[in-house]
Image (spheres, rainbow, N blue to C red):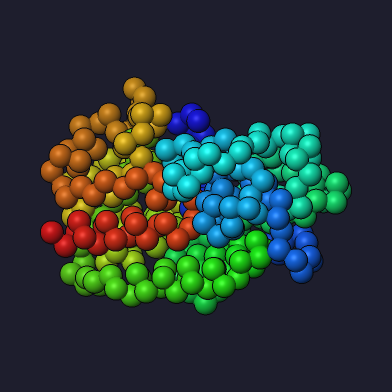
Length: 281
């Protein structure tokens, strides 16, 4: 997967919000021939479904940016191509973006139910569009409601256990491509849950604020994706600038694995806990 593709997925997965659509199925029985079309969908299928329910996952399920990559080992894969998927005769297709924008409509016409992973920028609330709401939704669609409730309970217990800091420290999210984000994104909520204020005050995904960094520095750097060789900066990246490099060398730096934040899910807690622990040192 290219650097551009990985960042596009990250930006889309963490910045979009809203309640997920209802699954395009009204079956009461548990699906037993599930096919997952992309690695965001893979995470929920591998976490919540029984092994005997899973027919195939996407080829990206075992990649480094897949949180459930170890559980994906040995699971059959299928390309997110309609003909290949239909040959497997699934009773449920799970997707976030796999198969392209018209995939859900196509499978619906072929009488194959589709469960769509919703996007969220809300870590925790009573709203459907939060991570707990998304977990409940996916678990119900996979016929694993009880497993979903258990995962939500664990998610909220870990959040509650985090030590909340109120000293006003700031953190700046940085990627090798020189990208950061402000209010309105899952990353922003992640920083707040870890006890930080977001150094980037402007909403949306944008380049690092180099001019501001020349005279004002954050207390910590949330450094994401730096472990991946596929996402290193090119010659024109803001990360090549000495001002950006200085942040990595002089400020408290908390490495964040790409798999923790590449899709909206319970695994963002690993990033929140790492930030809370790193900022407390």
